[in-house]
Image (cartoon, rainbow, N blue to C red; front, side):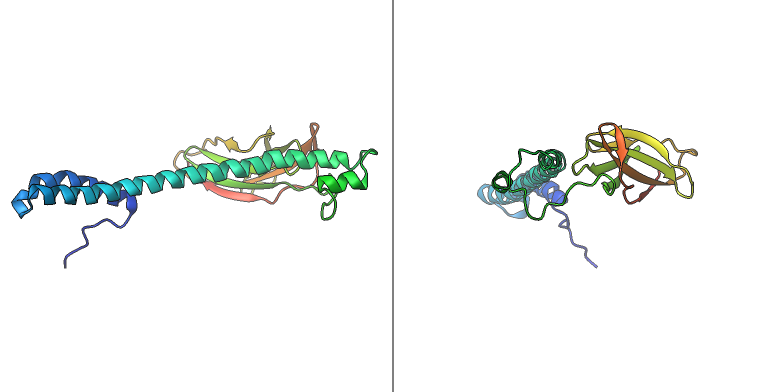
Length: 204
């Protein structure tokens, strides 16, 4: 049974087209193509490879832009929310000013006793990356422990996401199950509730 020669993924297709475009000028005459036909076949292959490269570049640019936007939301909007909490305790704030600033309505007052940060964990070669969302606090205290352990170990106080936990495996090559959680921090004081626990199986 004959198998499909054209690759299924675009990166592989681009490589295939570049190779075909180079080799068709060599073998085209043998296969009955004149110089113009061989050049036309090369142009088709090269054009498709070029478009794939442009698409991949745009995808990379879009991802970078989305990451930048998400980070701006976490940091810059988080800082603005923290300022708004202070504004609402300022006796100079009038309903008119609040309306002009758009800080009335659905806004919920910041409560340090019930504050709960959001975190997530991702695996990378050699470390675990913890991303967090401050949502109006100065930073977070990050803790970890092996799955099944009772005590949490303090890792770091961080003010800018992400935090990378470089774990040394007790037995090289043997994966370990780790749990992470975080608390909010305002003016060097830990506040509120622990984040939901996130888990990863880290293999080094």
